[in-house]
Length: 385
Image: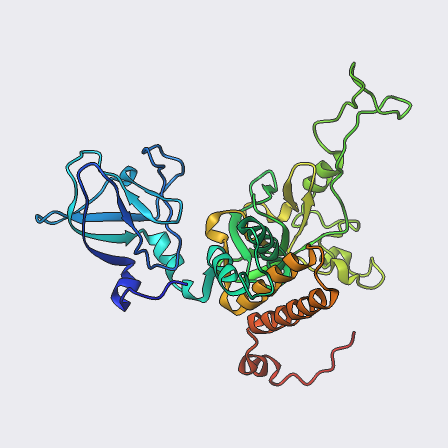
């Protein structure tokens, strides 16, 4: 578990002074002193080939004439997350170095101390729970890694702060692709001219068909020469839904605008399920997109969704308030999968896992009494359910 080594000025500037480093001509310099809470990422591999879009740091070197930036293709990330600097000129280095984080990495570094990486979780578990005289005398690191990743996935769904948010604009096609690391949505909302969110609800008024078979005059799905159904290119249901406008069409059967003035007195009662004018969305599994009602065209939306925390390396971190729960999850997973482990031991760690997970949920819920008091102040009405 790394200790803080940079000063406040270095923390806010995203800089770290590495001091004087030198090497034998032609050999590499291995930098183990990375102290930022964000993970080092290089866009290049060990031979200088670009493997991703951007590095999150820049190395600077002073040979006595002033600091100059080192080409990013000369450094890469080693097996144990060190920065390895190559010397292509075979002239060797002998001078001061410092690391400068790029702006997006500085943003990730802010507040990063409240998290612990999954790699540190695995290392700490092996040190604290595995060995002679301990309940788990031996275990493969790959086994610990498997249970740690499964724990991160399970915790991400309802315990950890794993919600992501994308700011998007609804195009004329009225649909946007589902994010690559999407698991489930949390909230959909459109943003007005002053930046206020208006919640968009999923609709039960329509749905998106997953198959579109072409039919003969008898209604039988037609097939090609290989015996596979022929499908239409576009859903008629989707076309009819998208062609309506809750702004201009206020017909009696236009349920997307139940408060339209022309509908007064034409419906009996009020259906709470459709009593809002913020628009609607559906999840189109056939196209892998989220589809919206036509009144949301060209509007700015915020899509908040849950990821499992394993999409990219930068997501592999756990809030420190849930660290103990992760250890108990890993221990229970390992012990429950082994033979000749007494059942009372497995049950004990099952209870420990449940208890620590409950504590993590309470801690991460971040409930503040003053905020609740402010919300409920002057609220004297009974809320009926």
